[in-house]
Length: 296
Image (cartoon, rainbow, N blue to C red; front, side):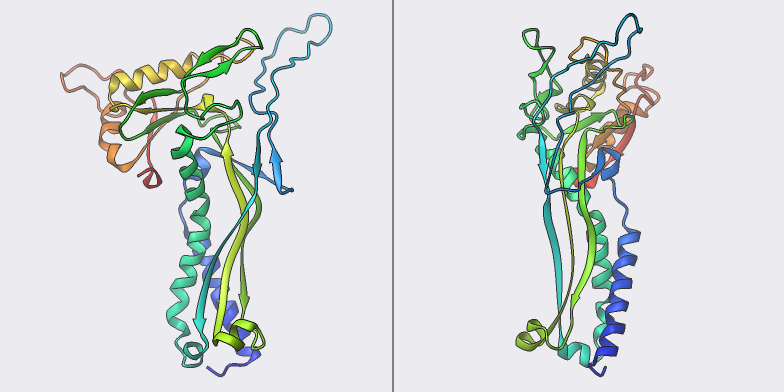
């Protein structure tokens, strides 16, 4: 290839198209457990987390439900992924072999939210959420000041973690905060420093986002062996949750998220017709099993 402005423009278009193709073919899972919140500033505050209210019969004047406000915020971060290709390789018509690299770059951009969301989920045992407690903890404070009780969404144990979640609400257990979409950029001008100094063309992708915890009430975790009793106990615990106002939260545990190592155990608990002793499996079809490689 003759290295000139016109040919470099065509090359940039080809690599950009490959990036977009990869971006569109990736299968992501993060949206199943995380609410996407658009961000317009460097840091987004979520003071409304925990403000769960209920309707009442309108008798007399309206009653404002002044529930607890929380000072929880998520700061956006900038992420990048950059690829360099030697000018000589482009000049010698080797650019065709790099198309899969840029498709992979696009796919990596599409799945990067998965990486962020599920890494946060796994760290929920040692990172705080809006109420100051670890996201998965045994003593979340619930109730109005002076009347609070400790509530747990962590069953205990020390093995591989599994998660039961209510994904039917508008607000999901986690938050994916997006400030700027992943974009494709290039530095291929013959006067760019990278070309002049290193004889190298550069392409890259970057975006701004971050993740944070939503409502702990919608996600319970266990590191105990995944069996029928542990699963049934967790379902009962979730469905019994009440808000600060003492009203039931109507939590519906609909999805059982597991790493690949627990797929068989999960399917035995919620899809098998009968238990090992021949008894009817009363927990059958009470939740959907979701196997997530990011949880491995």
